[in-house]
Image 1: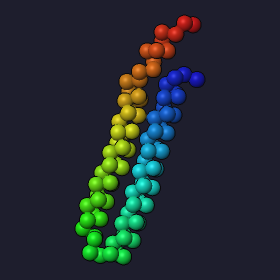
Image 2 (image 1 turned 135 degrees about the horizontal axis):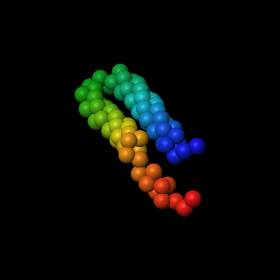
Image 3 (image 1 turned 180 degrees about the vertical axis):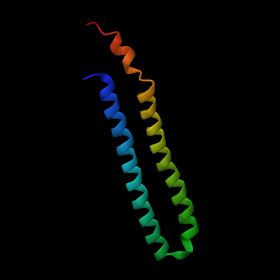
Image 4 (image 1 turned 90 degrees about the vertical axis):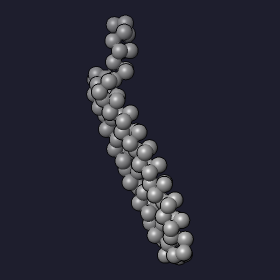
Length: 87
């Protein structure tokens, strides 16, 4: 198989697993936020601020992973190294 096919598989895994991890993390955090807000409604504003901050950080890590994956898909740095290998 060529390197481009491995890169396509890797890009799909990076984006897919990153999206799945971000969705699971945000879902768990949202459920814990609702549980905590139901137990102590007076802390809801403080908890909401912290939750939105963490949602932004989780989404940022996924977007960075997507950017790196798309960079590998379009401007693949590994092709130049393989072209220089002795045959």
